[in-house]
Length: 100
Image 1 (spheres, rainbow, N blue to C red):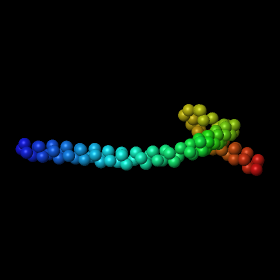
Image 2: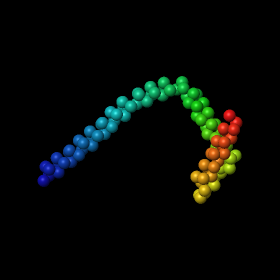
Image 3: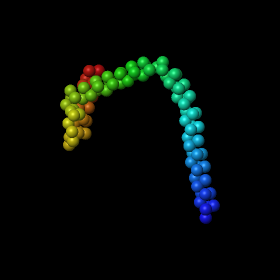
């Protein structure tokens, strides 16, 4: 009985050590790859920042147009939510087609 328990215990210890070593080997392989990726993308940081700012400005401009057309996003639990938004989108769409 003691031999069987010690065999099970040693199996669990070996399995635990094996799993931790596998985890460490993956962590070591991923380290240099991430550092190289950071160096390569460092030059485009300003480009990513400018792209995010441009996307944010576009989103805010669209939201402003919807708000001007009657949509109020700050109203909580609005029972007419989808309809209000759709009506504002239709108004904005008509304004776009009229201006083109």
